[in-house]
Structure formats: structure tokens, C-alpha cells
Length: 108
Image 1: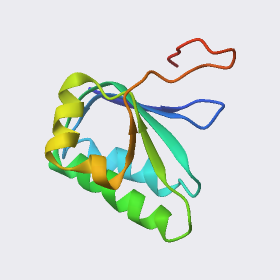
Image 2: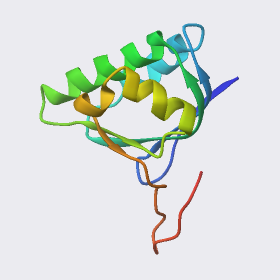
Image 3: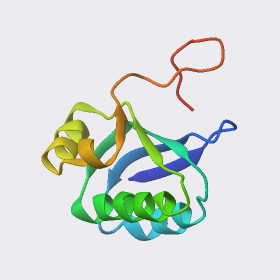
Image 4: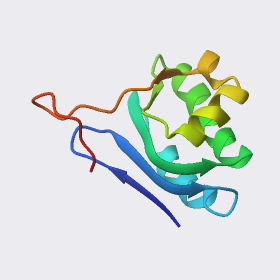
């Protein structure tokens, strides 16, 4: 299972498993991103090399226009994958939960 949503603040929420089977759906969504954004990963259980490639390609495309992706609150298993792939060098990764207006942690 994989789900991708965008809230009214522009935060993108990934949920489930982002693998080579699901990356096609995610690619269509990520191609539409043209400005800096936060991608919340707290409900993402696993990301494969195909999913990492999609995040990296999107980051590189956005950086060419002065924009970027910030990765927010990765789950422990995804955090480990990001560290092994050295994404902490390529992305701003915030390990804290996203805050809703008013300061409360939130989910879509």
C-alpha cells in the first residue's frame, strides 16, 4: 500500500511503502512540484532505491531553480535508509514532527 497527499499548507505526506511498483504513481505527483516543499515521512514504512532516486531527481530539479525539498520526521526504518544513502548530506532532514498552525504536531 502507498498513499501520497498534499495538505493546504503544501506539505506532502507519504504513507506506506514507496518501492519500484509505487514509484510510477509518485513520479507523476513529484513532477508537478515546482517550489520548495516539505515531505513528511512519518507514515512511510519503507523506501526502495527507486523511491530514493525519485526524491533525489526531484531535489536536483528543484535546486536548479533555487528551490528544495525538506524531509520531515522520517520513521525510524526510513531514517536509517536515508542515513545509509547519505541523504542527510543532500537534503535538509528534520527529525521532529511537523507542526500544525498553533504549534500542535499534526498529520493529514
